Image (tube, rainbow, N blue to C red; front, top):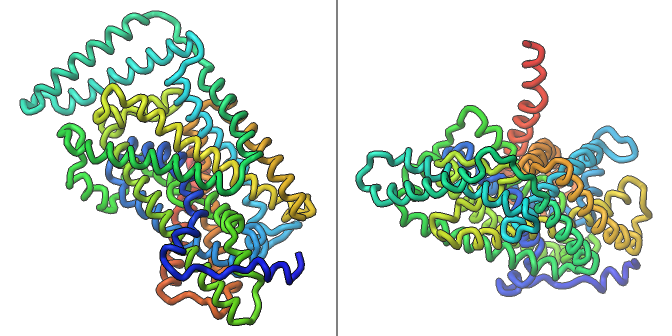
Length: 518
């Protein structure tokens, strides 16, 4: 593209708050990707394992990465370059590309498998609501009765002997008797195996491929925003109404415990640090965010960097829009994350339910039963489908953008716009099929999601290094941020190193020494 054409694409940034809000978008797309694997699955799993005690870590996990996210976006606006181009500029060993890009290649393989867990969750949600086979219907009945029995027994045990809870305990006794009667019908019978979730996953994948191939930026932005907003609202309403139920309400003592900065022993912390790589803006979203900033037009509207005052003014204005975009999306997903975490701790943690395996979605549904009663299943399944499918849809589109660019960075594609668009369409077909294959092989949605979280945690320190490189080696002197911003950035990078270091210790170093000791 000629310089004249590039200058013609320049656009003055909005100066009013209304104008700024109209230009938001990339962060909302990222939020659509986040509120799914991180919030609905990983965050609730942490609540189920650790109770309320890790609320502080969940909040920090959402807040701390925004500084790095904005630094990545600033780099793209100033240079017009993509994330992988920037990572490839970081000093260090090189074999065609640099060391961070090679680690990204390893990371992305596991991250892609994570999306298999998401499409598996979508398949489970649809299979529960609309089973396709007799075996699927039988599995639904058995799992429903088993979970109802466990919930009733757990609550009855917690409040046994409390006169104030007598009416609720009487209801629980009836519920337990009903569940036991239902399970007795299947006593001695072989447990049916259902492929309904996989069948639904195949159907949804094929539909998604068509939508992604013909879709455009605005459609992806609008769909993801609508889906996430709807279920987030339902979840917040559910949490608020839960406060009216004495057996489930989140007390002030629970919140104080959650903000006590206590670190639990055992499995809870391991799950939490795996989730840290996913909740909020994870490694995947940090890498993808600048690509959506490019698709939105922030870099194009700023124009190629020069020494003019006009370019400086445009850059400052669009970086301002970028900050609003990142912070507004952070508010959305932090609000949703805290709500999901508190629900997981209040219901799954107190009843000992673990959202795992083929019963993951059905178990998560229990978080809505106390408020919505018989309607909980349909409410939750619609919402779960919304956020999980939003994650699957947005993440697929995002991965297609990044992978098409990766071919150029690794020297496997010309990098011309026509070639890039062709590769994006190809990846929109190939990637969903790979996600589906990973779910069909492993059939363990939660494990796939958390595995992606562990790899994301390992990737985070490298992205922190890149953010510091962008700030101190690639930032235009006219756009140097304030000292307060630099403090926030360093705190953010420190947090990424802590998360990544602990993930490396627990997955690599500690097992090695245990084997040696054995």
